[in-house]
Length: 298
Length: 238
Image (cartoon, rainbow over all chains, first blue to last red; front, side, top):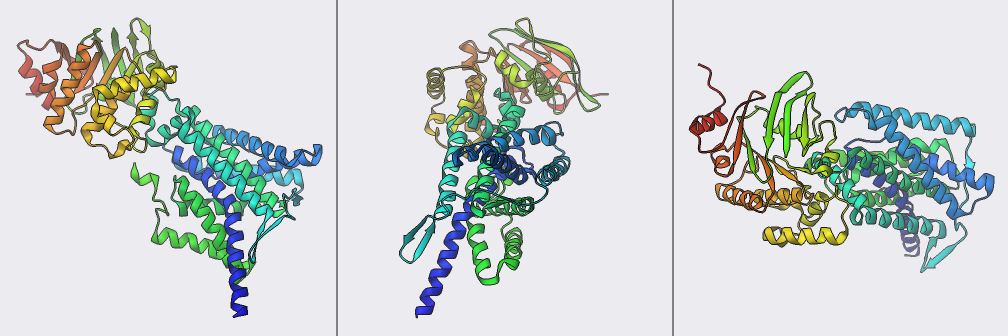
């Protein structure tokens, strides 16, 4: 009985930690889904741009010893700016119906940004300032890690901020109008290009926060994180349903939680294999994702 | 008011409009009739700036709007109520109306007042103000699309096939609304395939066939039956 109880606490603790960390996946998923919702195109550069933003934040920390809040702010702004550049370079001038060209261009930009990072850091991982790493709240037999609580709190705050902009502002009205009916949006006086550019910046701001948080939670920033984070982001986006923000939130937490379950039972080497299997399970049995998909409703 | 001269517009290499000229007079309902594929929608899309004209001109009260993109055309006073309504399906009725006023630099109070006015005109929209536009019936969506167009406070309202896909009873209602709006001073350029219905409200009409204006006149003239036949069937070549 004692063993069983011990194991139960271990597993629930693991799942809980995973759910908390999954909040960063939710943010990345929201970014992917936001851009997909607006343009019906995948921006493969997104996770790389998010991490590049975090690198800029780290530079501020390293060179001028900026405080944590400023590091996050700079990460977000840098990533937003990169988002704008990516929009102009990979989406703005490519014909609307040429999805493949935009996809390939954004994959190119992904590796381009990655190469810049590798070049400037000589490819070696850099220490990122951890947040609240020694804080631990005890709730019964479980412990709430301070760094993960921080991740969750920032994710919730960013998501609420985004939803506020989307559903309560003139800019959000334009963003949703363009994503639902772009011809009608133009007839209403909405500039589609400017709105799409803004969507990229918004998603970028969110990504910068997610990138910095991922780095803060793990304690390092490394170019090796780029591709796995891209893959996780895509998985979350597909599982949540392309274009669905609530879907991305739930799917991010789900992937984070399950990831730790796989880690607990099968070890770190097999973890990502099972996460990818999860993707295939969804693609086969529920291709529209948890919350259905925006593409089929139009 | 609206003056279109020698408008040429094309999809790729295919000229769809081959020199359209027409006038829509202030306070009047002008109808553009014609069979499928004659270029009616293309004409409206080109005037509204969704498609860009290859040559020719579009003037509104003397101001040249020919090369302006759609968002700028709206702010100059031309609103288009598109074919198949094209409401924003996952925005509620009120948000659709707010989107209609996007081009205006109006205060929140002005917009609220305009929305209240439109709710008085379209009580069915007020009843559904918090519902997603995609869940409305076809007739309600058409009313919403018209109301959204009016939210731009246009000097001229272009309407593309407002009766398409609606039950006869609803079509009657839509045409009653068109006449009411016009009675209140709204200038209208109406595109219709339902020529018989359109001629009951039109002050002046044009017949477009194969990308060219082939006939124009006022209802009540002798050729009306011939116009109706050709608007439905296209010109019969012996």
